[in-house]
Image (cartoon, rainbow, N blue to C red):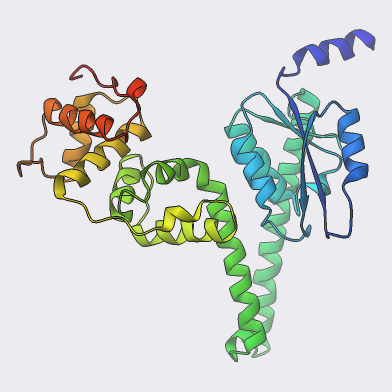
Length: 316
C-alpha cells in the first residue's frame, strides 16, 4: 500500500496547487474551505462570492483562463466549482486544453491519477445519459400536449408577459457572458495589443486570419460586456484616432506581428494580400521590404519593442 501511494505521488505533476473557494453570499465566509485547501498544499487560493446556480463567476473564469500548464486547480467539494455535471466537464475540458489539472479533495475526481480520470469518464457517461433522457422526456411532453390541444412552450413568452420576457433576457445575457469568458483567451490578447490604435474592422480581420470568425460589431459588444464586468480595461472602448492610410497600415502590421511574432516578412505580406490591403503606393502585391519598412516605422513609434522588432528578418 505504501509503495502504491508513493508511485501515485511520483506520477503527479510537479506544478503548483491553486485552491478555489466559493460561497454563495457576502455574509458567508470561505475560511473553512481555505483551511482545508491550505492543509492540502495550496499556497494560492482564489476566493469568490456567487450563487451556485450561476455560471457567471469572473474569478473562476479568470483562473481557468490564466492557470499555467502543469498547475492543478483544487476545490474542497465539486459543488464549490460547478452547478451541474455538464458545467464541471466544461471547466475540466478548459483546464485540459491548457495542460492544467483538476482535483476535488472530498470527491474521487483527480485528473492527475488514472482512478480520478476513470471517475471523470463515468461522470461524462452519466451526463450524456442525462441529456438523452431529458430530450426524450421533452419530446414525449410535447407530443402529449399537442394531443390535448395545448401549445408547447412557455405561455408567458407567448403572451408577452413582462416578467417572463425579463427572465428570458437575463438567461440570454448569462449565456452570452459564459460564451465570452470561455473564449476570451483566444482573442482578447490581440484586442488588448491593437486597441484603441486600430479600428474594430482591422482587429476582426486580423482575428479572421487566425481562424476566429468575429464581426466588428460582435467583437465590440463582447469587449463592452467584459468591461462592464470589470474583466477588461475601459480604454479598449475608446474611439480610434483618425489616421492617414499609411499610419493605419503601420499599426495593422504591428498588430499582426504582435499576434504572432514568429511570422516572417513574407508571411505577413501574404496575410495583408489575403486581407485585400493596398500597399502604401496603392498596389495589391506586397513585398517583404514594404512590410519591413512598416515594422521599422512601428518600432520607431514605440508600437513594437526593440527586442521583438527583429522578427521576420528574412524574407521567409
